[in-house]
Image (cartoon, rainbow, N blue to C red; front, side, top):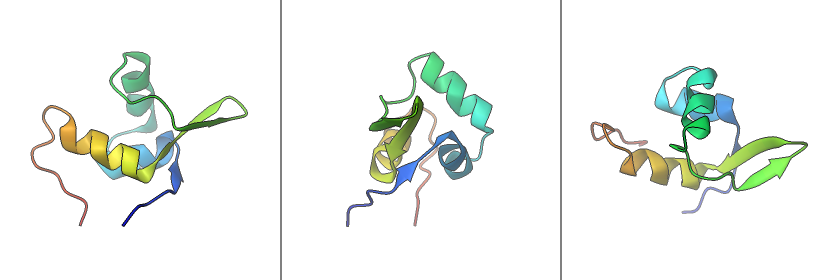
Length: 66
């Protein structure tokens, strides 16, 4: 199943259990995938994009979204 819901920094942060500023820092340092959508200058990612990124990032300690 494909999840095309758009996530902001806040939703990504909640998903990986960090603060939104941490996610902003990841993007600033090139550690986050390019946004799937930008609206009014704010980046958004599809939930599936985030889940794929989480699964492939170093140190994910086999986190899974069940």
